[in-house]
Length: 281
Image (cartoon, rainbow, N blue to C red; front, side, top):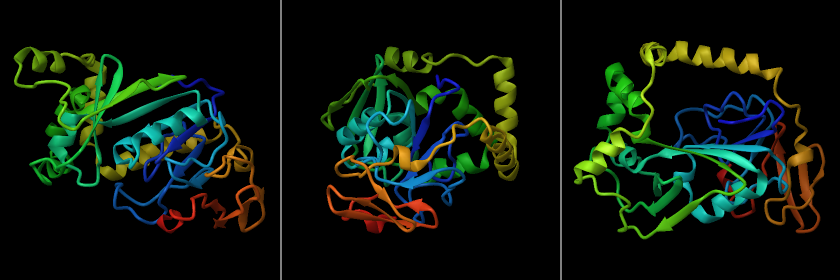
């Protein structure tokens, strides 16, 4: 990710594993871990908000990180428009269509591919055929995960953008490639940069490291980065999720006088969801 040292960085859908570089975190769910891998982490300025109605001012951030969230969207075009509204650049990561069929997450709504620098999205209409098989392999087999890391460009979509997100939404049946075509399959396998010896060694060590050690390493990196993060007052960047206007802040609530809406602040965390979504928190 091409993030400058002084950039103000937002992470959408930060969940249980926020990126070290993010200055502000935003997630829709505080307690419901159904669509993530663990309990929420709120170790820096945190807002409960919906990615399709982000509670931030226009252009409030220099960079927005969005990893493994876009495929969950109800309205993917509205989601993308909101990312472009609040930041001037960002990074999107999702499972690729190959990864989606392999792992078969039942709560994902979109198939995503990156073709010639453009995100291509199609509505997902069925789950992959393998159930929990490859989830269990990923959790128990270090060699399988080493293969996954070696071919991350096959299993993942990674898209960095500036100013505008280049994307298109296609009909469900409009497949973007034919994997029965040997040339297509060969090109896909060769599409990523081959990691060097040091990268392969680091990947092997990380893959075989116990979960508790990986979590500890991530914690050390996060604490080390804390002093380098931008100091953020949420009142300077947050906005009404409906009108995007200013909020009036009190100790236990924030108010949008333009729309007549009030939002709870719970344990210091603003719950900036529209009324029909507020129960999700």
